Image 1 (cartoon, one colour):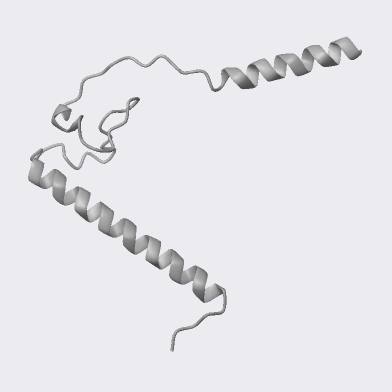
Image 2 (tube, rainbow, N blue to C red; image 1 turned 45 degrees about the vertical axis):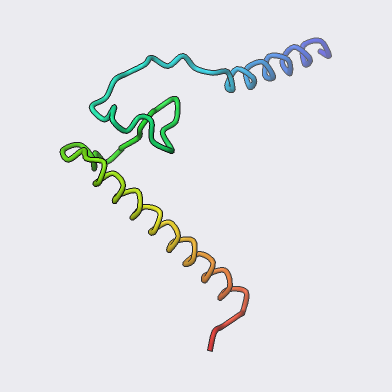
Length: 94
């Protein structure tokens, strides 16, 4: 039974380690190749536009505007979270 238990543990370890092995990803082309070299484009997905916001009007000006607005909204969300944490800690502004 001791050998059987060691075999099961070894098999579970191998199965868990295989989850972290790199997957083979085929190179695909998209209509948004103009933005593949922008900051934030990562290797598996490239330029990621899940909602198709740049599908029709793919100008650099529109891309820069959307990036600016996304950063602004992210900063506002961070401040809102910080305000929630501070308020729950019992600190209230006058």
